[in-house]
Length: 286
Image (cartoon, rainbow, N blue to C red; front, side):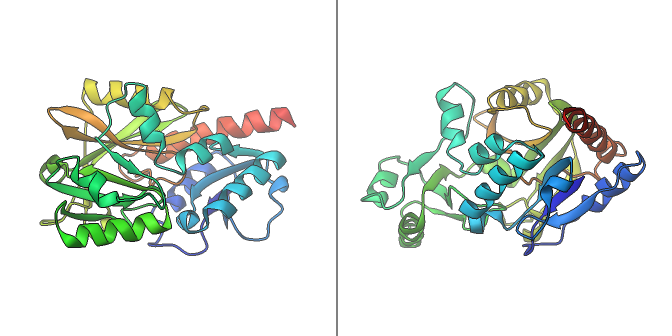
């Protein structure tokens, strides 16, 4: 099988080697290849999108690659899931369906008077970020009435769709919980905590990873979120935070999430088992 990565990465891939090893224990050879390299993708019965952490900078080309590749071979996650998950607008859809999501103001590209729309929300401290991005790239935590906030908002709106959320203080205090599922089955969970004085939980900003046992409420919400995906997922990470005393969805990561395969002894093996099953399905289809 092929494990898809990126040619230009914001940080080194910390875990694909764990998956390669777990697959090898099952007698499966996995090649790690950039999505935009010249490959005969049809030669692989299974192509797994893993760490193409440059996709958001080339979104149209990446989505076109996913469509082409899914016509040649068995692609996971499916191209329909990848397209749906590539724009954070899926959160708007989930909220409309009653899923608990962090409150969000959506501002479309080139929209008029974005500052006035933000002011009308009455929020104090906010996070402004592009609707297509990864790893908090392009995000700004700021007071809603700060001129820097308006400048950042207008800059982002000129380039694409934007989402603005009230700053969820529990992130700075307790972090963000991630639940990882393989084939729709819960595997493991972790808690990501930001560095002192920061709110970004990613390790490239100093965030740290800690063991976590999810609550019943967290499991229930995560599994409800997965039910809303347009197709079944072979892998997914559901990121939750606490807001107003209950867990709410921050993001569903179903394209290229870090899956924290080193967090538990069985994590990589769990993923390898799901991919081995997908490989059998693909080979049976011929």
